[in-house]
Image 1 (cartoon, rainbow, N blue to C red):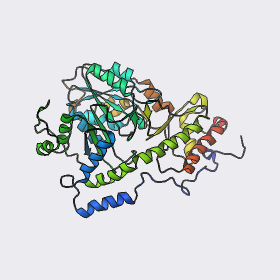
Image 2 (cartoon, rainbow, N blue to C red):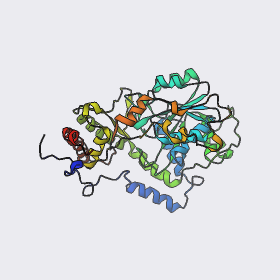
Image 3 (cartoon, rainbow, N blue to C red):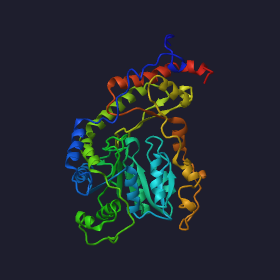
Image 4 (tube, rainbow, N blue to C red):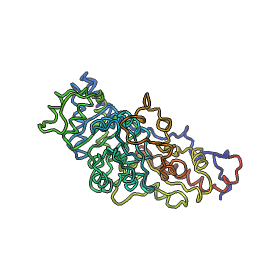
Length: 430
């Protein structure tokens, strides 16, 4: 080792001074978005009730994904709750979800007075494990939420086979996977219904916002009603059907509409999505090429069926091979001016809202009289998810605004720490 090299965590000079050389801002908002918003403001029409931008955005998304209907909402979480409500998920129902996923997936299930049941993820792709999914299905299972995590499509053929066998609904959560493809199909086009989020950390953004997509006429009708005070008049104008499984009547519903301003931004962002995704993929290729030379940090696996769009670049850290704890390694890299992360802190079933059974008043939905069994989340075990949370997952920064120089700095910092591992091992300070 070059004796002149000293890690920043040990008092050396950081590889990158982020005050002098900050990372580029994400997301990029350019002149096109500004002009699109100004155009809406000049009309004085901000609501989708009178405007046209939301409908234009919906039409663009439906064509892009290849589905009949796209219904824009105020957030990704609201989109998921609308999807669950549309499918009739309610008291006594169970919804299977992956344990390694964003915490936002829990609340919409509990809001429907249903219970989340957790399945483990595949150790290579980090998406839902179809074999464990099959084990978690009961007579009370109403649906499964398939999260295309980090931009990686889940193994949809196997998941759909399990769902068909047990007659349960498939909800695709594509919030981190705009533009990802499973074989020749866009994510969002394979389940009964799908949702996307457009918050700032996603592959495309409207600031906040979401969308529900489906090919099913009746599901589209119900989403439209639930989104907008159950006003049947507008729904009848949107979808013309006579024979319905569910009667088209007023339901207990919400106001989850997207604004014209959000839609205007989304129209521009969608035009940029392919280019931005390709930049993410090139950054991922650069990371992978250099990580393959490091024993103890494994780049993400991308199966042949997957077109990965890398909302997150999640590598796997092997403490036994590197020689120091993941926590110390991440702290050392961060000291060099690189925002490395360990990602999700715990599997979803460790969330206090579940372990302490405090979701709703009077014990609901956990003590609901319609539940067929008592769920104890303290006994839930998903070993792959626990390993990712507590020991192995490391997230590298990845977004299209990063330059090649930024990518080099990120990898140089990781390589610098790896080369100085023996010094860190000998340091008793930590």
